[in-house]
Structure formats: C-alpha cells, structure tokens
Image (cartoon, rainbow, N blue to C red; front, side, top):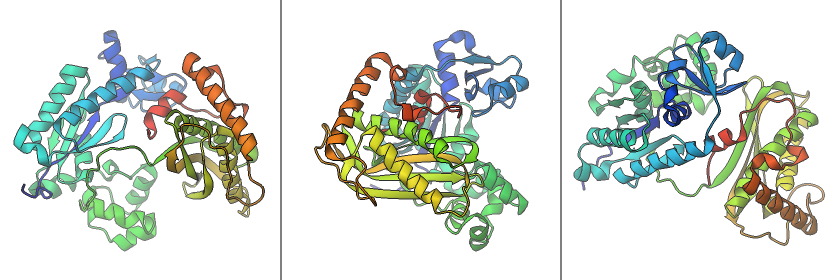
Amino acid sequence: MPDRRHDATILHADLDAFYASVEQLLDPSLRGLPIAVGGGVVLAASYEAKRFGVHGGMSGRRARELCPGLRFVGGHFREYQRLADQVMTILGDATPHVQRISIDEAFLDVAGSVRLFGPPAEIASQLRRRVRDEVGLPISIGVARTKHLAKIASQVAKPDGLVVVPPEEERAFLDPLPVGLMWGVGPVTRERLERLGIRTIGDLAASDPRAMGSVLGRTVGPKLVALAANDDPRRVRRSGRAGSVGAQSAFPAALATRELVRPVLGHLADRVAGRLRTAGRAGRTVTVRIRFADLRSITRSSTVASAVSTTLTLTEMAERLVLGAVDAMAVTPSINLLAISVSNLVEQPAHQTRLLLDLPGEPIAPAEADGRRWSVDRSVDAIRARFGRRAVGYASAERGGVGHAPDDFRELAEHEL
C-alpha cells in the first residue's frame, strides 16, 4: 500500500455547539433561538447566542445582559453521551483508526480507507451527511496532513462545514490565521504573544524558538513554534482503555488553606474513585496538580504498594501531597485550580485485603480500616446507581460556596475509562 503520510488523510471531526445542539434537537421549538445550557453559569451556548458574545464559563447574569432574549435550559446529560456515542460509531465505520479526544470530537486517519470510500474529502462529506441524517446533529470536519492542521481546519469550518487543506496550500492557509486558533494558545498566551507583535500563526512560525522559550517556557515555546510551522509528527492513535483517570476543579483565586483544599480534593476524589470502582479498577500512582493565581502550576505524585480506589484514602493522599507542596513555600500561595489523577491502573473487581502506602509516616489506611472504607464506598455506589448521584455523598466532598459546573456535565468532559 502506498505511503500516505505526506497526504492530507487526517480528519478532525467536531460536533458544533454540541450540548446546545442536542437541546435544540430534543426540543425543536428551541431551534434558531439563542439558548444556553446552565443557569448561574453558562455551560454551553448555541451559535445564535454566541453571536451576542455569550460563551461557556460566563455568568448567567452577564449572558443575559449581552443577549436579553437568551433562554436557559437544563442539561440532558445521558442524552449527550448516547448521541455522542452514536456519532463515534458512524466515524468508526470509515476507519478503525479513530482517536476520540473528548465526548464530541475525534481524529481519524483514513489513509487505509481511500480505496473503499474515495478521497478523504469525500469520506468527510459522507460522514457529515450520515451524522446529520442519522443522528440529527451538525458536525464540522477539517482534513489535513497533520493533526494540528486538521484541528485548525475544523475550527475554520465551523459552523457545520468542511475544510480541506492540501499539502501544497498549508502555509497559505495557516499564515494569516489568528494565533489564538492554535491548540494550546489560550487567552493568557495569546496576550503575551500579541505584546511581542505576534498575532498570526505565520508570525509565530517565523519567530525564534529560543526566544519563545524564554517567553512561554523552554518546552512550550519551541513546541508552539513547531506547530505553527505545521511540524507535527503525532499520529492518530486508536482509542483504547484509558491509562489514567482524573478530574479537576477551577475556582476563583483563594489562599491554599486546609479549609479550601480539603473539600475540593474530597469532591475530586469522590468523582475519580467512583469511576475507578465502576470500571473495576484501581491505581497505584496518585498525582495532584496545583495551579496558582499567576497561572504557574506544579505537580506532585506518589506511588503506593497496593492500588487505591477508596474515596477517603484517595482524598487523604491528595491532601497530603497538596499541603506538603504548599507548606514548603515561603508564603501561602493563592490557587485557582486543583486536579487529581490516578494512573498505574490494575484490575480490582473486589477489595484487596492489604493496603500499604509508601508515604512518610504511618500508613493512611490500615488493611482493616480500608476494608471498611471499601464497603462504605460500594454502598454509596449502589445508592447512587438507584437514586442518582445527589442521593448520598461524603461530608468531606462538600464544596461550600465554591462555584462549579454540575458533576454530570464535568463527567462527560473528563477522560473516560
């Protein structure tokens, strides 16, 4: 078979305004209207609302000021997962090389499918037609030689479009585009680049990688310059069982006190451990990430002798890692994000009888205590399975006044097992 690595055979498929589009699909009376999923905070907005400047993460009050006719709707979280899975099944009909990167987007490598289904542009057109006809949702697709360029092409294609970038037209396509379209360039990075006069992807591609390293970091700076030049050797990896499970929570900047850290980590541990137990898995490595108010971040991790999947044990491990990092600082820092992930996963359909934690001091949970925790967790899991997640929980996981998106919404966005 010919080597197509230099052809435009990578697709990036992205459902348009997914959550809002699903609500309009479920309730046709909402079609064509500016709507937002959420209430106090906008979780997602339709394109009709985005035209007024409404976007995810915005307060409901501000959204209504920008768009007086905005209608808020509640989320149908099970429908989001069901419909997104249907779309992924359709994408999988074109090629087995599908890498799902979130609930509503995926990369495809169709190099091996052109003899069956035609050129990549035709495959993309067929997929868009099928998603619209069989699921009822709009989807935009970018076709290019690299993953980076395919993702940018799908953004340019929105809403509900298709953009193909032939290899000989890559620079003409990329150079005039705003640098903010690049994967990994958020508002803060964009502002830093603009202060240097770098506003387009072409500007960044022509910059000195070492200079960008001094501005954006030794790793991030050169990497972004390479991507701007479309130097992206990453291949499409077939989606498989996840190697880690994680959750994160962002909140207004506040001092990293125990009173703040404990409930946030408890809530995150509850989500992560619950998903581990549902999948019959546990992990030996626990990693926490702390993001400071100035957007710097650090990570700390610990690997234990026996795999962990109990909520309170994971909470205690994460708390010890976070507070240990904070206590080592000269002053108590302000933080605005905490994250927990568990890796080194193993099968654990039932509780292991021994838990020895390789941390300084006494073990957090001796075998007998951890066995009781496992029993409590399984009882909580059973109640939630029958009556819903809010039916029962842990006091340590209550988050007080910190504002968050609904858990069901966050679960969809986070890495699945």
